[in-house]
Length: 137
Image (cartoon, rainbow, N blue to C red):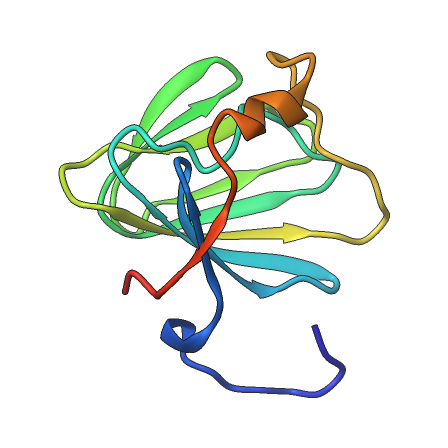
């Protein structure tokens, strides 16, 4: 993003929306940080695993976590630590939109692997083209 420090309200940053929810990229140089707003049944991503560790903190609402084929409920202030190579997806589950912070390392290269989707690009396209939207917060 930049080599200098900055302070901004996430309400003023660029937000993107498609059928996977609404999200805002906060940083992406060495660490990717996204703020995600997920409605009931909206997945944050396709079921996948990464070559880097990730972390997910539910700030508001409820989600379902599918990890290594198991389903777990996540509530406000629940944190999911995901080591490299662990298949997972976070899905909105409550009657009100969930707000989730996702953090992942971007050092060392490598891309996500999608064990259930031989053509993840086509699967993502089925969720619709991301569009810029105002902050949902």
